[in-house]
Length: 335
Image (cartoon, rainbow, N blue to C red; front, side, top):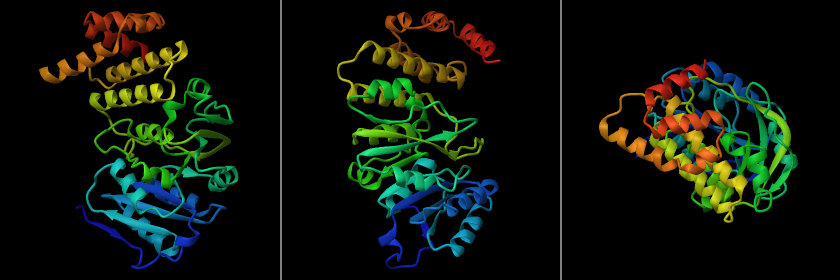
């Protein structure tokens, strides 16, 4: 078992009785951003939380910075993973060590407004309602703020808000008991979409999602972030399967809109394969065969019927194996 070091003294944590929220921050070579991230957490107006800073084998000064913060604030625990194992494993360790009733995840290169936690607390109603805030990237998304019942409002929630494409763990307030009782984890074998799969598995266990009218989480895009690595076609198809299973789980009698949505997901997966160079790069014969068979199995005539002009062209190029022409078309359109 991998060695981990925890700076919390042996024995019962004196804060344990008052911990309402466990904040899990995976850290990998984030020295340039870590001060801003942790400072924003420690400035929270809501104070009853523990902060788990988990070092994923960083080679920069991240661990030194984490330990410095821990010396100043007893709510902070530093967990040092000697060997890098990725964001999924790091988050899972955080879940296993968390003591709070609720869990929220913050990436080490992101930061939050000082009332981020308080807004969650003020909107908390029940353990079977997931709280979700807007996340600021370049600008807040155009979300429709209300509480959605997953049984009755499924189409509106996922079609109108396009929620599946923002299913990462940040900006959400999870119940620890629901996670542990149902053995929900981040799949460390999947390099892309593991956070969305976690989200889908979680909301299978609850009744509603409350999208709060707030945008207090600031997402910073960096190339070296734990959660922003290039992905394989295997991961893309695992993600596609998880999304399709989830849609049918919540909507057994599939209407036209839901079918159209599944086709949209299919196309997004295929285009991701193309954009990542999976179709265009020189795979070995076996991998090429597997990849193309998966794509062909995904596409049928209904995809053609439900597609716009551009995707009709894409469909025909794929079916006729005009891969070089397809790549040239994508390259021109992406300029």
